[in-house]
Structures are given as structure tokens and as C-alpha cells.
Length: 392
Image (tube, rainbow, N blue to C red; front, side, top):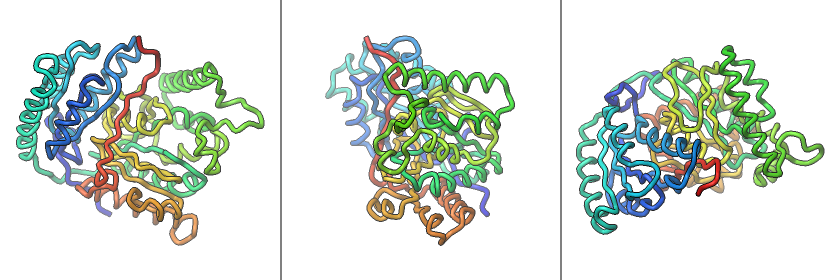
């Protein structure tokens, strides 16, 4: 089985599977200008979001961290930051830190020139960056260069029976090649945390994970929804999951953790925090909301996302290719334009779990080498940063 991919080696030694010029606004107020620049300049992608100002404490630091680390993702060749001029997240500081990493970062400020001129100047800068990025060529590198993020969304009964286990097979293969995997969605680890604790040897790591779980559970209780102790009441917070046959968070979680395979847990990270270089599985604190969870893993360094969906969702990401996997043959048929891989043959008995896992692994390598996912073809560039408190 192939154990190499063809990727873009960055100055810091990390490897990307895409070569994007990223246009990123520092604040919601600069979003439209950033979008108009990106959509009019082939070779660019845009990470639009609704944060960047009027945030306090952890929310401010989390937004700043996510914007910066998204720009540092290895799939990004260079960056154009679009700032407004009065926002809390400083676009100048973001630019300085990106440049300090060795990656090119340009900046325009809307309040210095107005919308029309900002779009004109930004488009000229973006065009120049795209031409410079073309000099980067793919080179053969080991599979260990990959960082895989694993995600559930629009889950149903089939997710835990076929799609998630197939992804778990891929996670195991990536780890055996000394690669790294990120498992997020703290909400969907509740009820299955005992399985994860057994895979942690470090006491400090266990305490960090306990804190993450408690924070999420307490928040649900404080907002009139107990995801743990509702006797005889479905406690799955997603109506779609309940409709698909997953009535409790425990059912959802037991299926969700399988995506991480049997990979040893080597790190527990905050939302959007860059993972370490050590091979293994990293847990990241994110909500169960798909777009915000994927955004965090991409900021953490994920270069490919494996996204399972029983009921179907078009979700993608501007920076990392999202491979959409379903275990429901009806969904695979109805959403052909969105689904990349059908694992329902595990349930029907047409394929073994191992065989399906091998097929999915081969698909990952093809995408790493440049094959476009359905989400990429559909220009599905969803990006949203988790907001955990009030705005002023």
C-alpha cells in the first residue's frame, strides 16, 4: 500500500496538500471586501467569519488564535489580511506573527481608502500572491506529513455502524505511518469519556480533558439543557440526530469516538490551538456544531478533514479539503453531488470494515495528491469561529 503523498513543503517544514492564497478579514466588518477580492481572483480562498470585535477575555484570545493559526495552516501559501481599522483583533499584529513564521502576509485597511479602493488594491495584491505561489511544486513526502481532522455531522444510525468505524480504520493507518489525527466535538464525547481516559497515560492531560468536559456539561445545564442526567428524556441536543435514530448523547458519543480508531491520545488542545509534532491522536475542545468544529481543527493544523454524515450535509472548508462519507445508502443516492465515499456496503455485508477502510485510505491519498472533493467542486467554503460568551 502506498505510503507517500505529493505535497507542498513549507519553510517551517510542514506539508500542505493545497496551495491556497488565503484572504482573511480580521473582523466581520471587513468580510464583504475580503469575499469580493477572493471571488474575483482565481487561486484565492476566503475565510469569512463573524467575529473580531467587541469580545472579552477568552473569546477575544480564541478568535485571535483561530484567525492567526488558520493562516499558518500548511495548505496556505500566503495571506492577505483585510482589516477595517478600529477592531479589537489587531490585523497589524496578525500580519507580524504570520511573517515571523516565514510566510508572506500582506495587509490592507478599509478605513485608509474606502471599500472600492480596498477591493481594487486588494485584488492587485492577491493576483501578485497567486503568481508567486505558482512557483511552489509538489514533492514526494511520507504519509506521516498528513494531519487528519475527523468530524461527524448530520449523523444517524448508520454513522456509528459504518462511516465512523471506516474513518477509525484510516486514523489507525495514518498513525501507523507516524501521522497525526485530531478528534473534536467535546459535546459528542460526553458519555464515552471513559473510553478516552483509558488511552491517556499523562495525569495532566486527563485533568485538562476533565476540565473541558465539565465546562461543556455545566454550560448546557446553565442554559436549561442537561445532556447527561435526563431520565426517560432524549438528551441528544440535535433534532436531526434524534430523527436519525440517535436519541441519547451516549449513543452519539459511542459512535463518534470510533473515528479516532485505536490511536493513543498524545495531546489535549484548546479550540484552534496548533497541535504538537508528536504522532498520535489529539483531542480538541470544540462545540458539536460542524462548521465551528472543522474551523478549529483546520486552525490546529489539519490538512484534510474526514467528515461522516448519515443524513447528509454540504459542509466544506476554504482551507482544507473535506471528504464527505456516509453510511446511509439513501443519502449517498440523494446527495451524489455532496458525498465522496459510500460506506453503506459495510452494513449490507458487501464489504468488510477492513476492506472499506482500505478504500477510504486510498481516497485520502488521492485527495492529498490533488484530487478535488465534492465540497471543493461546489465551492463550499464554510468557516465560523466559536463564540463562547457575550459581546459588548
